[in-house]
Image 1 (cartoon, rainbow, N blue to C red):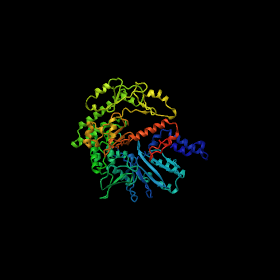
Image 2: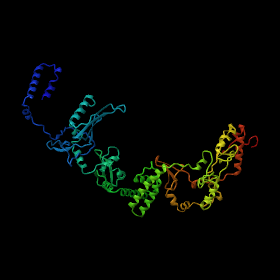
Image 3: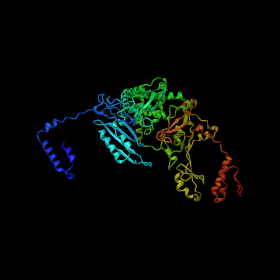
Image 4: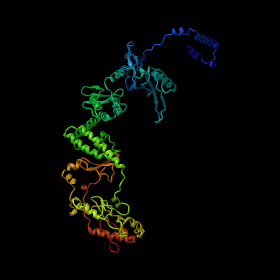
Length: 627
């Protein structure tokens, strides 16, 4: 009482009207009254405030609200708390018929006024529902910064926040007088919370599952909520939710986005609409089964489903179906077994073997749980072996010195100076070790490439051939001695001597009759059984020129290609059986070409250079010397 009178008369320094002393005298009298012993008796005469349910007032005007999301009802012991309830009149013609309603949490709606929208949001608070009001007018020029923005903070007093919103809209003169009159109503009624349709939808959500869709399509988080699953707690069963989201609706069902951003399913035969997906019960039971299963049983279930899906796709479109050992299913199996192919590219070869084994067991009968346990152990062993291999020091291959670098090349077997290189074995060997290792068996057919001694030092093997003198030199002798004797104006570059080139392969490409050699048993088995070569990928070598991140596969035509799981790129490389055989080179034309090239290298006269017309039709024109 004292505070109310104090607010009424104002501060003494601001009072300018007469009778000020009379009002101050009355205020002093109240102070003396409050200081007496009759305070308790006076306060007992005041009735305590009655805490009753809020009654929403209706306004005789048409409803224009648009529900964006219904939200959910807050329940405590399966009952709506008192602070979330209110009373409203469903029918304006029967004002005495009051019904109980509930304020949902996560509710959002908008009311269009003057070509703009005023939004109203609710959420679950600590002591009851909390509310927020948002109004934004975009920039008429299309800028990112809005011309006017009003975002009121969350509060539990709905009347206070709505009064503040109306006051700010009126002060800013953002809306017309008719729009403000339309908004001057109870916000629970204005935005559709106190609407029979909204209350029926909230009651329905407690019985029938509801799939919310805030965008054009439901996101994965909304599918998780639809199955009552948690993204973190049920992360291992994410594949169930993804399968549910990707499954096609069976005929005659179609889906559409209904009121309140709820996905509805329409039966075109009976014209019945429901919120429940036709396959909801199946995937809900599948999710509960995965929660009760062990890790091995869960993996077994996923592998069975992958193989079943592969066979179903094969029956639908057999001509365009990729082989089982493909990047798609290798990635799926890696996800099942908990392997990250980008960080563990060495697991690809093991996963290919698993796919073959699982496919065979699937056709012979049901997969065994013990087999799944063994696969998990193999995966851990592969990781352990890779960790040990990375800690081991790298040993350089002596054969690498044949391509780059200088110096001597040593035998891989005994460590002495090597005298030859075996292209089939890929090793540098001395004469004694080569004879010993290639004495019998298939190695007896190997043909070595003997090293050519350097023309200057006579010790190191020659690796470069001069295009001017045709001499063979090691890298050190060529750069330090022989290159200084060459004419500088020619800018000659040496040719690298390739000791790794196989003479058998050269004869085979040229169609030489002496190229018949004994074939490897693996190659003979692949040629005898084409499916073995076309359906399954060969095990890639440990170290390839492409690197460990590129893996070999075969497409549906049996053509080999390489795939990179990190960049998601694929590429093809020419195969020996697909390369067109090169026709033999005419020895006479080759000798004539060498003569012309040699003459051009020795001549200092530039007039001979325009006469070189190799590659053009017709013979080159004769010069003055008759060449």
